[in-house]
Image (cartoon, rainbow, N blue to C red):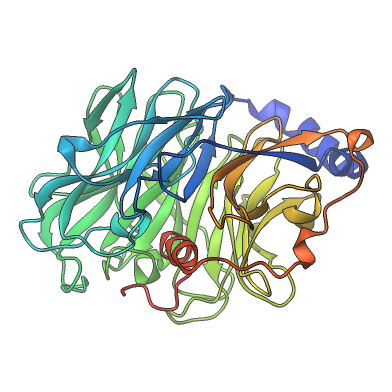
Length: 424
């Protein structure tokens, strides 16, 4: 992610708003599936300006996951902390400085019997009772990111080109807002600074917990503030928050008081994510965009679908994610020039079906998870823009009846909070 100053923002906005035909003409895609690690599923959740693609791939048997870096389509398993069974890179990692962050289970059981935030992001999608910690990976070395005093588990989501890593970490407080069947200790958003210091990012007044989900090169951090709950979405995301200089700002909502979750922020301070439309903890969320000028606005969903999520954004304001529901259950989508587009209408014929889009780089390459409709495997993919003159025709896959295997459905729903019941 390249830093840009405020003086560059106005001309960029003018170009984007004044050139919808040019941008739409570039929105046809050639799909390349990425290598796997022996399992039948993988998801690419981030792409940086070096072309590094990051995410997680299932190992043989589809019961465990491994944090994965794809270099020119070839998967590089990053390992786990202390020989734990699972690891993953679950959020977009945009930095181009060679640092990758994610989460890894340890072999150790949690001393308090907790089931921390990590388990929905692994292949099995069931609570494991293990300690889970965020990791920092660089030059082949994976190191753990520590909790606050008294805590055990941590979670790392993003890193910027200054080397600042964000996420959340437990402390030693037994939080009465926790659902003790899953979580006992309080957790707060954190910046792990390059020198190893931990900077605590407090929740909004009246809330007990907070979690950071992304950071840009200006040091702006986004995340959630709310109650402890089960430490996975819902009431933990009562408020969407932006921290600047450590001070939290409530980003508002689109009608709901739960699942208000920012997922990404670009260097212009544009924030995307998903949020509930009405009060209550039920999952009736839609993708949103937030800007300092316009506040939080819904990005909508494909007509007839149930929910949508925005998962990634680039400096040009292209937004990617998924719309859930309809005949094909999941569809990767692109928001561009004020339009919501099913990406399966933009791919070259013969392409796999695109289930979700996790991130987009500055050149418009999009990564995510696809479905091979013949083998029913769901590999990670990269979608590369191609000139419309080089395409014979557009794809019509969005109108086909796609059968998503149960294991794929469950894994995506658990990972993205789409399941009707979070705990099996």
